[in-house]
Length: 146
Image (cartoon, rainbow, N blue to C red; front, side, top):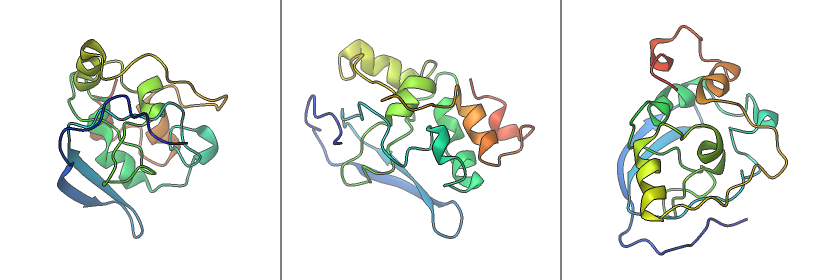
C-alpha cells in the first residue's frame, strides 16, 4: 500500500522536533506542504485495535495534540516516515473531525473522501486509542481531545 499521490508536495518536509517516546520509538513533528495521505490503515497502524500495545503510551501522549479542537497538527502515518510523510488513514477516519488543518485540506481539495478502514476494527476516538495503549484516562493531556 502506498500513500495517495493526489498532488505532489511543493517542498520537502521540515523536521520541527523529534520527541523520544520510549526506548525504541519517537514521534517526529513535521512542517510540510505534503498532500499525501493513506487511503487505508497500514498493517501497523495504531488506530487498528489489533495493534493495541505495539507502541508505548508516551507516543500517544506526545501525539494527543493532533486530536485537539482546531489543531493544525496531523497524525502522520508512521510507516510513511519523515522523508515521504503522509497523513494516517486511521486518523482521518476517527480522529480528525475537529482538526482545523484537516478540515481546511478537505476544503482545498488536498484530501478527498476516499479513505476506508479496509475491514479493520478501529478505535472510535483518539482518547479511546490512547487509553487502550496505557495512557491514564485522567491524564490532563487527553482532556482537550475530541
